[in-house]
Image 1: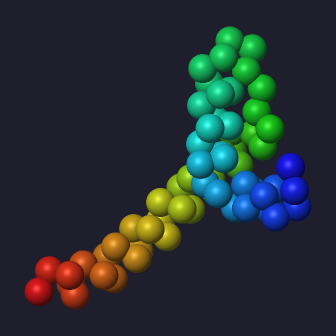
Image 2: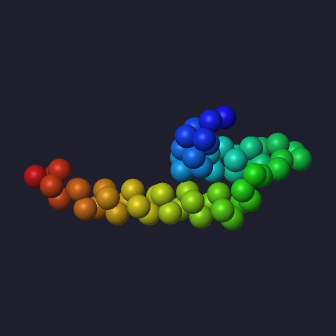
Length: 62
C-alpha cells in the first residue's frame, strides 16, 4: 500500500469500525488497534458529525 493510501486509511473511521467488527465476529479475532481505540475514534467522529448537524440544522430548517 502506498504512503498516501496508508495515511488516508488511518484517517478513515471505517477502518476502525471494520477492525472492531472483525475482532468481535471472528472467534479468535484480533484487533489491529484495540477495542478502546476503535470505539473512541468512532465516538469522536459521531460527536463531531453531531456538532456539525446541530449547527447546520437551523439554517436548513428555514
